[in-house]
Image (cartoon, rainbow, N blue to C red; front, top):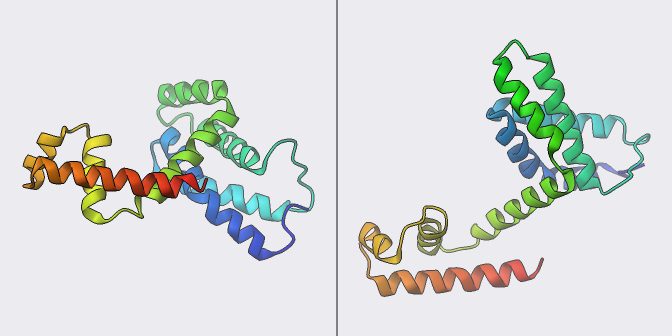
Amino acid sequence: MLFRNKRAFKETFLEYYTPLCNYAANNLKNTGHAEDIIQEVFLNLWEKNDSIELTGTLEQYLFKSVKNKILEFIRKHQNYERHKASSIEQLLETQNIAEVSDTYMKLELLNNSLRHLPPKCKNVFVLNKFKGLTYAEIAEVQKISVKTVENHMLKALQILRSHLKQY
């Protein structure tokens, strides 16, 4: 038995829902279908709670289940963009599920950590690290000095380091 009570199941759902949705949406390029697949995976997990025997971690089991549901979805809808579906299928077949789950869980951790940044720090950090803007470009766009951009980046990095250090 994986889950002794509803609370443990709910905690697992809350921890893994977003990274699993991101993984499925990234492969299907459709958020609605991705969410449906994740719901199915968790429904199966709850219904088969007594009979599931894990050979690896729960995280790997969940990502592999999502991968299998994506493949099942693609095969079911092969008339819909047949070529696109087969290339996704080939990609999924070659993925190392441990690496995939680790990557998506780290991305979720980073996203959660970014939520702890003050809005201006977060904006400056995102413009620099995700959009690739230089400090001078950020200063121009935000109508602040380059020194202020440096201070925001320093503060953002300090907050992120302290938050991520916990993990």
